[in-house]
Length: 423
Image 1 (cartoon, one colour):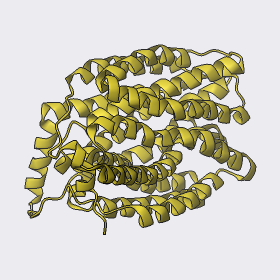
Image 2 (image 1 turned 30 degrees about the horizontal axis):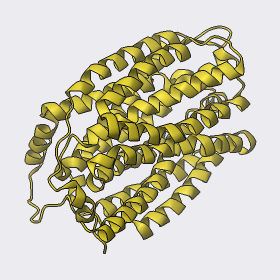
Image 3 (image 1 turned 120 degrees about the horizontal axis):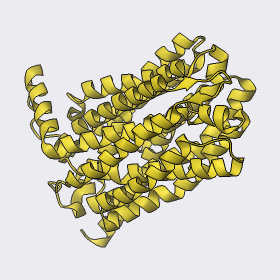
């Protein structure tokens, strides 16, 4: 590729990443806003930690089901068309959360939002896998995943402020408005992406499609990738949904101090996400993943056994937790994305997303069953949840050594312009 075409391709690549970051930001904000709202919703609806866990699980189980179903057809559509459709449904689901009048209505609205949002997340990383050369894929993944950090720094404190002053409905109204703006940006700026489509699409019976999907996930490399991501969800979502309630009930933080957890943790990971992605591109994704996972074990133990401590120490622990959780996810996603060929990447990432969502929902549900509530209102057995998360992390360290990158069909130097078409 000549220098002018290479610069043009690089510019298109970053414009694509900008749109994906905007979509991922609202998608992740919708997910993370539920965690700090836990104490607020438990008080307003008079529900237990287990019932709050049901709301979290409703989103993830819905995303898991639709992720599995979408695997049968997601690779048959232009990536742009699929992304716009899913993002529109996600925006509507988020608005329904805002107008939900009861606990049951909120759970149903979360099912709608999860049904679209879960597949949307998988499609974003399929686009990265299709359009970003492998040697820059770790950096691109870290860039898009930094949207979680931005959501934590800016969106979560704002959402909590709205919840505390105007009621829990308003954060969802804010998110629906932001999603509408991002949807408009995506509609105007996203190029057509048909490079993964075959020249002559063939019709398949449901049985043939199921057999094809089974062949895809039964490949040892793909199977290891799926199990790795599922264990990562166990290692994270047994702990994450209950950090806010635990910090309020056991560590001594007030609800007004909860935004600090997400501000400092998010601010740190804004920088560490891209940095870890660059390290993964330079030194190897499996090696960097192992380093971050080993570091996370000590932090998981600390946060799930944290007694009443000064606010500064609590914030140091929660910030380290977010850094290590995000730091191991960036190289893992980049490696998993590279483990499958472009023609099947959308289907595989949908199945992968489905497995993640179901596992994270089951993890938060199981953790809710393990947790208890003492007479003084404190949460009990969180250390047992931490032990389960540590065990899952150790399994991940062994699994990542058995996942290998699949060479893309087209040369990486020509990959971006070949897979992105302009209308």
